[in-house]
Image 1 (cartoon, rainbow, N blue to C red):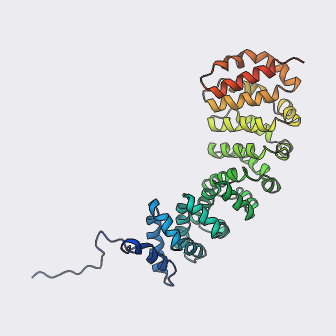
Image 2 (cartoon, one colour; image 1 turned 90 degrees about the vertical axis):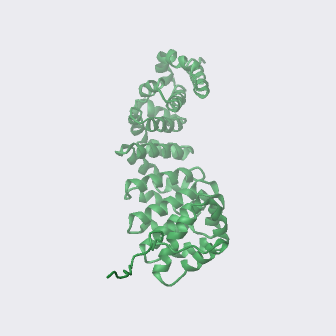
Image 3 (spheres, helix red, strand yellow; image 1 turned 180 degrees about the vertical axis):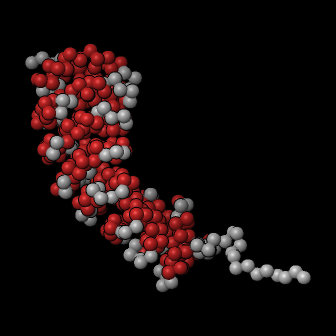
Length: 341
């Protein structure tokens, strides 16, 4: 005789890790209530569902209107890893939109998120850094990170974090250095970036060189680069197999060699002229452009001009380069190299 079997399993269309959505415009208010529930399972299911729900851009503004940002801010200190992880992931998604970045600043979320930089779980730290990096991409967001006194913390984390998070930190600092370099210089960022120039990953070498270029825009940064021996390390990267590394290393040298001290350090200590001349014919236009600009700076020193006069024809050949920016750089370089008092 057949018997009815009562299964404890959910139907295949039901996910027990997510709370079911309420109908229509009641979905977000319900999720917001459940985010603040005292029961851990309810909070977990709500934040999992919310993370999926927010991937639709149309839901971002409404989520902020009902107070989701403030609720997520509270969940950043939750004792449960899943809640913390998914809360930071939600904030990262929100931060990808202009209204979300404004909400970050209005609700003062940057500092609470930054406290997860010390979380014992890699995924929580990674999501926290992703959220902060997203916010840093706007000038106001970068200023907010500087005002929160996070630059020194980010620089310090570069020495101990896993490589994937190091890349996020280097990107965050890149955007922050556009609005403030003094805090990074005080935090010994130039030394830290220079130490990363010999990293095994080309992406980290490239981003470290890029950040040195950013940090070398002010005079204090140029002098610091000379002081901590960044120039020889950058010259070494001019022969790197990665075009991003070569381009950023040449760009950093271009920024540093604007000063007289930088010029002579690159010429005498770094032996930079020949490696830069070799890059004039590089297949990547950004590499050619930055190399030409760096050579123009070096040719302003008599010793540099004397050597570069031997290579002027090679440089002149790029006055017909297919890239207009390279043509202009080559024309300026030729003019400076052949200048006579």
